[in-house]
Length: 576
Image (cartoon, rainbow, N blue to C red; front, top):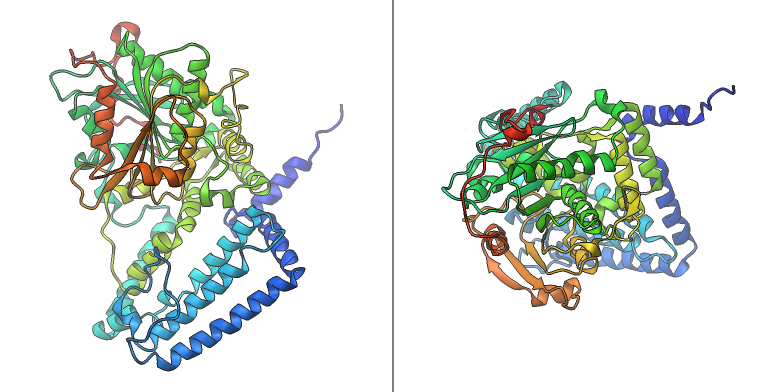
């Protein structure tokens, strides 16, 4: 018998050893992107000339501005982009900080021109180079340094350096916590099952992958159709059950709905040999949960809600059920969930064949993808808000941003199992199998056009994980009544959006099953705008698709072996 080939294992081992030095990024992928950009730029003399002219013009504009910059009423030669608030403090209008910020913004503009629009460069490589250039520039922004930030300089003078001493203490505490594997300071005030995830309920089912929680009713009667919540497996479910005032689950229960929520297990290296793939997550996750819900509340259809990746998995389940003439779903709600991955936003920067292969090697070694790597990718996609503004506030101004329940939840990371996550990245991001009608369930492909129940789909304005224009592509893949809602906020804040919070708004428009497709820009102009929370709008939509309230269901189904196993929030969510 011939000996097994050592190549793949040796290659994977070698790549894993390099991972700590590259933060999980494929250096081959980066090099290919910069080679593509630099090679084409070197062969385009007109492009080089344009950049040279822009550089000279920018230098001239800055020199002219700097000569007059002592006058605070001098008109700047360039304005920051709308979302860039780094230079909003009044001190940036005074000399020499105004000249410093203008020099940075002009440099940023030049690199934007240099890294985009170079003929011959592939769109993916152009996006990678542009993103990398922006990250490098953001690192050296004058807002990040004591001597070039007027707000920090003023605070340092006023406190005789006390802000920097406190900032150093903050940094030291954060570094020690990071080294010990502890969560950020302040998270101890939000313990799961004590301050957050405290809506009363019972775990009525458990398998190796999920716990299913049934929540106790708070009304005398409930709507007949239960609600099943499918969260993403890259986050702990209790983002939808934070504090009582901003818990979507409690909101639903208080409005007379019977609510069930899935809680995914947090896999570790002990689970690597289970070899679970997407089919297992579909079967042991959504379908097992649906079976239990239908046993507890028999003879009723189910309102199913999926969030983020949970929404993608739920859409697959709904398509497979429709294909197989399974009509147990009364409606489908998809929150920030992509079904077409051709334009997934900046997350696409971290996903190509080289990067996925590199991640596969890392996950092969550990059995999972660590939550810190996923969190780092999300932070770099919005680095000004999540990295550099934090550096400014915590370490230069010496202030601690108060911890919130949402921030504490965000620090309670989850791991992603090797085989399932690798399959997800390849089938969705690389191959776009679901939107292309190639995604197999039980050996046969599914199509979202088979779905028959009404759909409520929601996107958020500032979503870096599931951009709303990508979520909007659901309109191209389904033929049912679809209510699409665009709400203020980002991927998490836009979802955790209780009534009564000032400054929240949303747009909504329903396309009937035979209605014409509206592209995102036309949709923006046509959709009605509403002040307040989308929760109340969705509740009205949900109740329009529900029956009249009736008697309360049992907690579990003891006669079918589904007796309560533990109090909510269960055991899986507590696993670190």
